[in-house]
Length: 499
Image 1: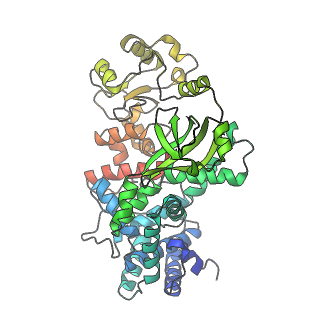
Image 2 (image 1 turned 90 degrees about the vertical axis):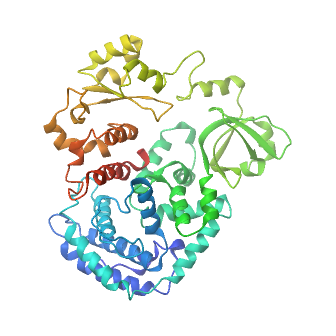
Image 3 (image 1 turned 45 degrees about the vertical axis):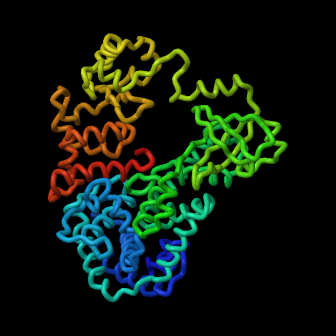
C-alpha cells in the first residue's frame, strides 16, 4: 500500500526506538488515521506526505497520553509556565486534561506539521486546518478508552531517565532522543540546523583537515548544549529537565537545573603533575578539569600550555563537550585572543550600559529616525559617537532606522533596526503606516534578522504590534492576552536557535 505507515516509524518516537507489545495496534491505528486524513488533502495542502507525517505524529501523541509517558504533559507544563495556557495557538477547550485527547492539542499538532512541511506559508488557525483537526480529534477520542497502554515504552522511558542521571556521557546519549526521537522536539529542523553548522565549520580554517565524521560529531555535541531547539526554543537538556519533573524524576531534574555551559574558547594552563588542570579562558572564567577528562597524553599536556575546547558542568564537575585541541601559546598570544573577544572591552575603553543610554535618551527605549543622517546627528550630538563609526558600517546604509535600548542583553545594549518603524504603533513613532503594518507586521515575529528577540518581546509586552496580533495567523476567537502569548510562541517556534 503506497504511503503506508510502518511499525518502524512508530518506534522512532519510542525512547531507544524500543520494540513494544502494542506496536501492531498503534501501527494499525496510524494507518486508519492516515486513511481518514488524506481525504482532506486538496488545493490548500496539496502534499499527500502531509497526511502521512500528521497521522504518525498524532499516533505518537495518542500513544503517549494513553500510557501517561509524560512527553505531551511536560510540553503542556512548559506552556503553562511560560504563558499561563496549556496549549499554544489554540484555546477553545472548556475542560483540558493533559493525559486525555484534547481538541486544542490535536489542532496544535496539525498546525505544527503544516508549518514544518510548508515553512514558507502562514496558516490560518481558525479555518484552513480546522476540519482535519476535528476529524483527528474524533478518531482519538473514540479509541481512547480501549487503546492499550504501552507499558514497555513507559518502562524504557523510566529507565532512560535513570540512565541520564548516571553521568555526562549517559546524558549526552539520552539527548540524542530529545533531538531526533521525541515527537515534540524532533523534525526536519535538525537537518537544516546541521547543514548550517556544517557551513559554519567549513568556513573556519581551524577545522581544516578534520574528517567529515569528526565535524559532524562536533556539530551534534554543540547542538545538544548550546542551541535552542523545539517549538519553545529551549536547550535540549531543558526539555529533558521538564520531562523529568513531570514524571517524578526529581534527581535528574535537579542535576539538569545545575548544568552550566561554556562554549568553545581558548584556554591557558600551567603544566604540573596534579590530577587536575586549572584552565583560564579568554572570557575570564577559571575552571578545574581532570587530566583524564581531557583525554590527552601526559607528554602532550607537558608540551603545551593551552587548548581550545568547550565544557559542560554536570554532576559537580566540568566535562569536555566535543573536541579538545592542544595549543602552545605565549602570554601575548593569549592576551591577543582576549582582545579579539567582541564581548570584552579593550583596556581603557568604556561600554555604554543600558542605564547610561537611558539617561541620555530620557528613558526612551526606542528612538525613531527619518533617515541615516538624522540618526547620525543624534548619535554624535547626544551620545558622543565619533563620526568614524559610520565608515564601512552597515549603519551608514540603513533605511528608516531605529535604535532599541536592550535592558536584558548586558553585552550589547543597543540594537539598530531598519524598515521596522512602519509596523510599530507607538505615540513616539511618526512613521507608523497602518496599511503596511496590516500586511507585513507579522514578519517581525519570525524574521530574526530584522529585530532581536528581546526587542520583539518588548514590542509585544507593550502592545506595539497590534496589526501582527490581528493577523490571521492568530485565532481571533482567542482573547487579547492569549494572542499576545501566542505571538511570543510564534516567534520562538520560528526562530528556534536564533531566539
